Length: 159
Image (tube, rainbow, N blue to C red; front, side):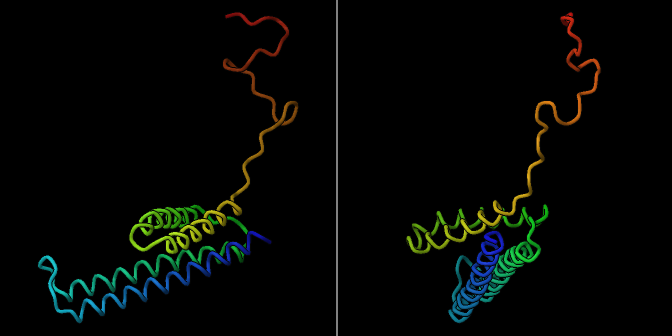
């Protein structure tokens, strides 16, 4: 039950973050477009379009992560290889951005980024596929006899 709850909460937080990032980049693009200034010889329309594109890409990436976490919650099983890679990269990005936000924005933004990071990592760990069980002594298959196999008789091995 906790696995589904964590995955749903992480998905909701990531979806909210996706909407927020897209909205912030849209506002920044509008501000840059209305400035009519050049920065380093780049036209303001180019900078505004790049800001819009960045907002769309980041928003879609975070929305994809949210959808993957919702699928994990609905199916109640671990994500596949692609989903795991996407969620791990999302966790890494949140860790790096969290480290940057301390100096640029403040501790509240850092705490939010670490909360999202913890939710993603917790969702990945709770839904980890089970490790294959090792056979115990006396259980499982016997090792095949061959040149590299240990001797099975009571006679000492010759080297």
